[in-house]
Image (cartoon, rainbow, N blue to C red; front, side, top):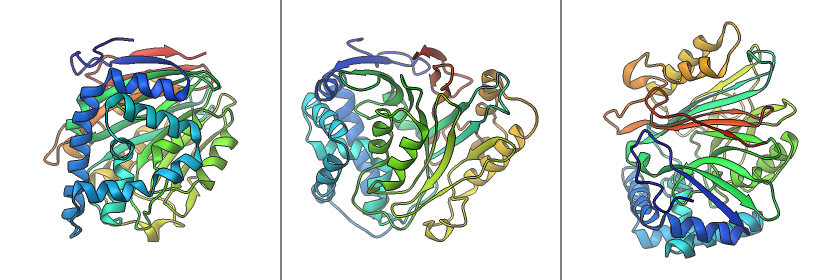
Length: 365
């Protein structure tokens, strides 16, 4: 494990490897990234409070953390392993667990503070490429991860080897749980942010993804996500080494599956299913609509390879509205990109935009 993993050019992806019990893994992570975790917490708490204030709901930092205290027992009950790792991160970073929860679950808990009234900004463009449409006949999941450019210095790749669970390889941020990744059982998962008006205290989306990294089949992941006491809205794309996959839109209280079109499922940041559309908080802006139309156009013909997907993720059609986003007036950019081949046990990732970042390939199994 590098002692100073973030002292790299932004185009290079820091890699941190952790081993032991979930509590020990968290402690190691918190200690290794303590200064970055403190800085990122300040960035994300400020963003959450400003977001709520813009919608007429004013909170102090103390009040926001008090609200998160109601989430802690829900998270502990949902998955003890995730709770123990989160507590370990807090201890290693010398912060309290509510501060780590805000860092990890920003988009969900921001929506709780704002009660679902949000604006365009955070994004992502994702795709599931089925066996019938991939060049090598094997399932592929891929996405850009778009968020505030100020988050980019904290993006890292974390390899976890828990004592009693599968190893996992994940793109995340300093102090974060699993975000987009692949485990040694062949479970691959990613996520896009969507917004709904039914946000409430509960488990945030990283709790769900981190739990998925302990599972071994597509159906187990699907059951876990749909039955969880969710805090906010997210879209989840996931699959396994048998080639099974789902694209699942979830609000805090409802869920619906996206039907593939010619063997491909694409998703950006607005709700697509009719079952959930009435819960969408507000118009998510021009970028998500442009990206959805553009990615659908780019994937509609022929077979897709890893290199072809990299080209799609790098697409700049529409400038600031594009699939590959550079810092715009709102300060949003593509912070990282990732492509996962769950049947082959491969994960490809880069920090920064996909045409600028240095791609690294990891063999998980």
